[in-house]
Length: 102
Image 1: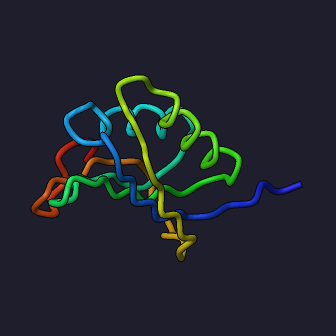
Image 2: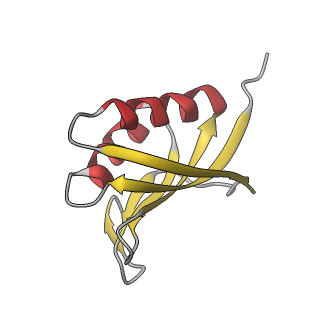
Image 3: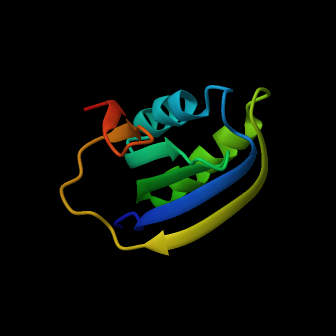
C-alpha cells in the first residue's frame, strides 16, 4: 500500500519568531524525511511549505506545537500542488535566498 503524499502550505502565528522555530522545523522535517522550506514573514508570522507523507506532515505539526519555547496560537493550513524532484528541507531568508540547507 502506497503512503498518501501531500504538500502543505502553513502559516503560523503566535510566538514563532526569535525562538528557533525555523531551525526546529528544519530538524524535525529532515528527521521525518520531508522536503520544503520555512521562512519568517515581516509581520512576525512564519510560513512553511512541507511535502511528504501525510502522517509525517501531521507529526511535524504536532512536534512543533509541543516545543516549550514555541507558542503557536494559530495555523492556516492549505494543501497545495506538490513540487516534483524536491530533495531537501531548507530555511529561506527574508530576501528569498536560501539561508540554510542549500
